[in-house]
Image 1: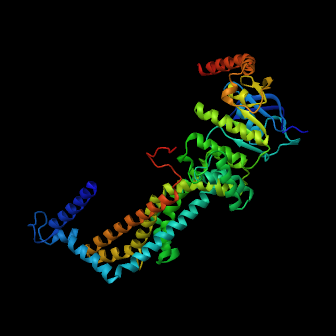
Image 2: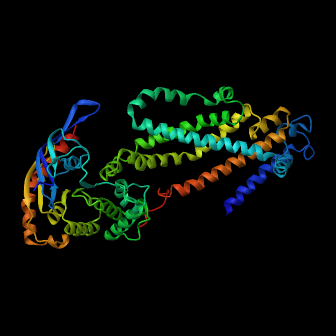
Image 3: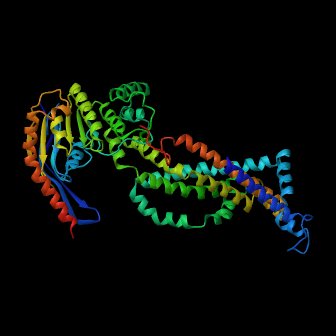
Length: 271
Length: 265
């Protein structure tokens, strides 16, 4: 069976447009696979190129070298089999919640009635039935995230890419959303590539946790299998001995990188 | 409510002052040597009012107002469409924008009212020369706003729409256009006002119909009361157009958060 996503020696070097001599290699030599139906989290210190990897997987960013294959086929252009949930606001502010959710169906050419029925069903599924006519600015941050989630999942993508989707939420809302996502994922079992800087979140949700080194030129330095039983409850699982054990193991690897990344940022900042 | 009262009082005070200072009989002339001279230069509010009422009762003004309105709306519609089209095009093709940049700057900084005589030669003394003048005024306002609006589309929204499967055309229709329209609407008041200015100035410089023409005719016969009447009608009309724009704006831009409004949970 082909991997849903396969990164092979991916390297991304950014060049400053007005100064070609100034270059920054965000990720280098990244090889990573995500099997169909597998939930993989990528953790790493801030600024280590996690989002870069996700943009590569989405086809929004072409790698400087290396290759990426999607279900065995090399990726060219935007990844049509993937849905992307962004870290920051990505809803169209001029569309109501329902119109935002059904945007993908509309682009695909579904009839308005079909799209509407499906959109309303998805809004109910993410707990926003009856909020369809609200505009994004009338919704709270958590509700906007739910709309974004429905907008992504309504197209039933085979791969779901998530870029710290809940980092802007308060801890309670966040745990609720994490459980909701897990529940939805459990029902459909899509491949998920989940980016986060929160190790608890990563372990609680995933089948595998990949640790990236500090940038520049970050690359995976650890790959941990999470053998905790499903279905899980993200707030309860945190107290289990197996979870604490795993957390300790991964943190040992991650801690040095976090400190390294922090020091690097300090030296760059200092004159 | 109290504010309205003050506003009304101010209006009455200004009109009253105007009446007292220009009436030949109320005050002895303290500046002009002749009692009628103040009225000659500054008009008399009662006669101005009479003239306005007369215009509307006989319906003489309607044809002129209609012409001015038509010119304003045409200039506004064509200018907006033109600005929208060219703005989108240049915002989405950087090469063309780079090539045309100095020319657009030049055209924009040119005092375009001066083109009015040329338009009269090209399009005659009818409505179209006025529409053309209004167009040149509206076009640049809308153009710059659309250009800015398209370039400031949130990269996140754009990427998100692409991931949702939007084609290039769908991006244009569902992302760039709505984003640009919010900028167009924010300049709606200005562009309607300028379309109106274009129409009236064009009429004033040479025409056979329109409120601007009425004012020009009255000036020719030193009929200062009619000039003032024309100015007041134009002002009222401009206020009316502005109110219309406000209503339109409110209906079309309901997705935008209003200033001071808090997020509803």
